[in-house]
Amino acid sequence: MIRLGLFCVAVFLLSGVDGLFDTQGPSFVVEPPPRLEFTNSRGGRVDCQAEGNPDPMVDWVAADGSPLSVIPGVRMPMGNGTLIFPPFQAEIYRQDVHAAVYKCVATNAVGSIVSRDVVVKAEINQAWI
Image 1 (cartoon, rainbow, N blue to C red):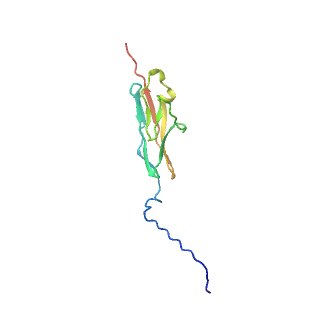
Image 2: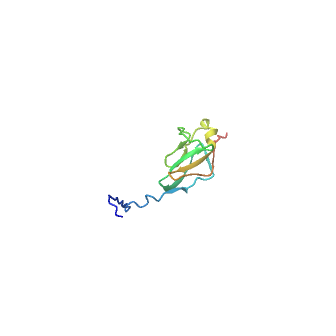
Image 3: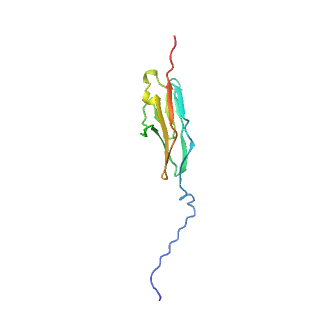
């Protein structure tokens, strides 16, 4: 039996798209330490970096998983994975910020990873007479 008709041939040329299908979930390049202790006169910072394909977004969350917001002059999660606690006056101390637990979360299309807990403790410099 002979069949007549149109036949379609699809050719995929994948040269030049190396890595297009080479996805990888995030992994930490710099995982934050378990503790960050600093004084109000110096401030502190903690870094978190991750890699993957596609590039992961790196965010900071509270111990309960809620995302961190910027509190001007008190706490600044940066877009590059750094969490900054600027120097502050003693009367600005906030226990919910300066004596708290945080986590770093890296997420891409493949998945997410969560860092260990980072226990933050700010100490107030006392003036002794």
